[in-house]
Amino acid sequence: MSNDLRNFLAIAYEELEEMNLAAKEQRRNRVAANKIQQERLDYLSGEKRIKAVTVLFSDLEGRLHMLDYDKKFLIKSWDNLTFDGSSIRGFTAQRESDLRLGIDWGAFYWGPADIFGPGKVLVFGDVIDKNGEPYPADIRGILKNYADGLYAKKGYTLNAANEIEGFLFRGPDAERRYHETGKFEYVNTGGYFHSLPGDTLRTFIDTVAEVQRAMGFQNEKDHPEVAPSQFEINYGYGEVVAAADQIQLYKLVCRQVATRMDCTASFLPKPVVGVNGSGMHTNVSISKGGKNLFWDAKGDEKLSKMGWEFLDRILTHGNDICLILNPSVNSYRRLDPHFEAPNQLKASPTDRGSMIRIPIGNERSMRVEVRSVAPDANPYMVMFAVFKTGLEGDTAKIKNLRQAQRYLPDNIYDAMDNFRKAEWITKMFGEDVKSRYLDLKQASADRCPRLLGTFVKAPEVQYHHDVYNQFLWNLF
Image (tube, rainbow, N blue to C red; front, side, top):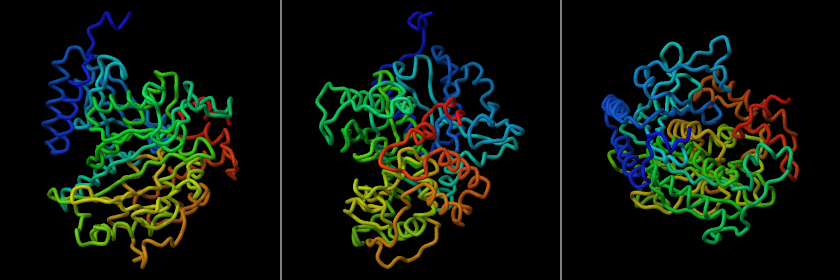
């Protein structure tokens, strides 16, 4: 039966924006969870045109998973939503497979019906272990508890904004078919800022921007990037968990829009050799009582003492956390110094080869930009590692933070070795999660040639964690 014959919810984009911004404001103002929960349940009960609620969660590698629950069932059973964790890579073993999903009612989104289907709303979930405790491999839950704890103890609000680059290639499922074709086909060869109105890349960017606006992203700017067929669509900063959620939604929206255009939105860090790769520059700051703690009008580069200490700790542990920020075989192609690669363990206001940049800022916008993050990284793990390291890591008291003392690894094997030996990683995540994550990275690395070489190999795409293809993963 055609959906046109059914009375499913389909809201105009302008109204969607108002609803999502109102929900975002509630979240920003930390409205009590029980109040938001009751408000959402009352809404779902009263809105007869909603048929299902899509609950989103992420696995250990940052791959987004979605479960659709019938609305009537969810209203009755929202506190006992179980799923098979053994089917999720990096989660439970088969013998202990049952996990639960807790609803994070504040992370509630209304999506455009033409992108997500009519009659649906979206909400993020927390993974709960059998004993009722947060599941240790659900990094979103770890990040949320950490951020809430810092707010309760010190009044800190952790802020983040991300600049996520990607490529638009011709044809649906271009990544899944790469082992057959051996190439990606550009939709546009114009380059930085250059895309004529109405061409495929510009149409894609405009459409994604409209969807983001409707979902309350509060867009800032969008444009083609340096490489052919490359794009970047920027939006405003948010509290750290909401910011990481928006990364997952951003990538989901890009993929949905691209598919509808018979294209593929790819977030491989370096899908084409010889042109710039894609990054996920992560801008972070900490505020307290509305005051930006990274701002000091008299500080070096206007960055406060706290900000410089934050930098020092990240650079000290730069090699320890590299596998988190650059989690795939392909991501080490991006750390090539010939293409503005941020592989130098130093901080700079101008040098784009630095792992950390100190952008020009003011009292409101002063921040630290971690440039070495790849777009295929688990955003929750990235945020947790950056803030936890910046606030609590060891400090080497580096005398000249602007001079490169060391360099990031240029291959995943060295990154895994650093990760394996790092006591700081064990302290952050525990031995169990550390070993699970390392096992996943080792499995994909073992399927790829050890030397990167001068062109992208089929296995580094075929077995990439961000390429959804269970069938190909089993062909080994």
